[in-house]
Length: 220
Image (cartoon, rainbow, N blue to C red):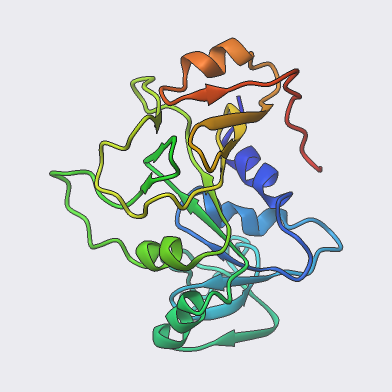
């Protein structure tokens, strides 16, 4: 099974040269450390930053430079800092080519729940609702199962929704999957050493398996 860093590495392979990319809170923020060499991308943070770099080394943090998850970050030459109104204007105008989000649940129809567990205190859904409503392309980085071993890829979400029919691809510790327009999770790749049968057992939603499923490979 992949760990969180390896999930981020695999998702980084989906980024194309020239993309503007928004990284959500959690696993997605790790993607900034694994942008492939020779690929020029601009990372956007909805609190008002274009040109986000990798995380700073210990002792080199600047408390005034943070991402939307309040983690300290670095900036690259040519980066720009602005107010959140302009940032959300970019998002709503579909200027972001790829959005990478975490999730608590994803349904086989592409619905996503990633902001609230009933009964637990939360500050709000932040920019997630705007991102899923406006993004052209969304990849979810998430754990395939919860701590109890129960699937988080479901026939329908049980938690409050963030967006409906908006997710197209998912990368977990077990697999890479497409969400098909007609519904269902299509298995594309499996983590090294993980069997297709184990992925079937770990997926509550409809799983579509066609032919031999290759193992995920990371660009080291």
